[in-house]
Amino acid sequence: MTQEYIKKGRAFKFGDNISTDHIAPGRLFHLRNNLEEFALHVLEDADKDFASKVQKGDFIVAGNNFGLGSSREHAPQIIKITGVGAVIAKSFARIFYRNAINIGLLAVECDTDKIDAGDNLELDIKNGILKDLTKNIELEITPLPDVMIKLLQDGGLVEHLNKNGDFKLV
Image 1: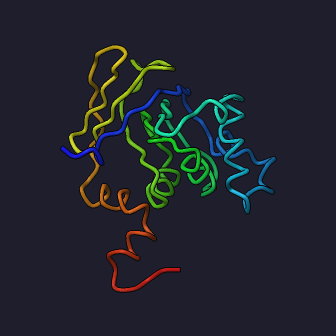
Image 2: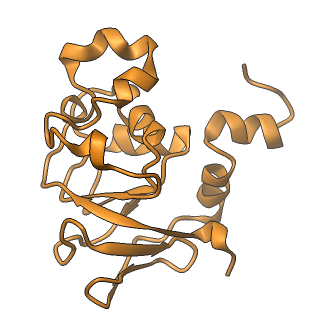
């Protein structure tokens, strides 16, 4: 197993129905052309300190229906900019999930009830296992198809097509 399939980080725990407005506050939509600045406000309506505490590789852990609401593609983009290793949730809103995968943000489904904020996690996407190192438990994740793993490794859909397709997207 290569390291490219293993991710480690701390859990930042959120509940059910975290909307794209919680992730990318609508009142700050004027920042959509400055995603680095917008990322400084990611999830502030759900946890005002998240953006200042999250470190590269950490995980967002949530309940059901993460990313519901508008199809705001800025939501997964600003999560990715913060360096989040993956979003792990019981379920995702369909449009958020596709937007996340398309921009290269790992999003996996798993029963997150046993995970607490601050737990140290190890995610093995190839073997479909999430280890809570703090509690010494293993949880199964919904497996990702190999093609989706490759797309994520390439950095998202556009990068994947540019690297592997017969044509280049701008």
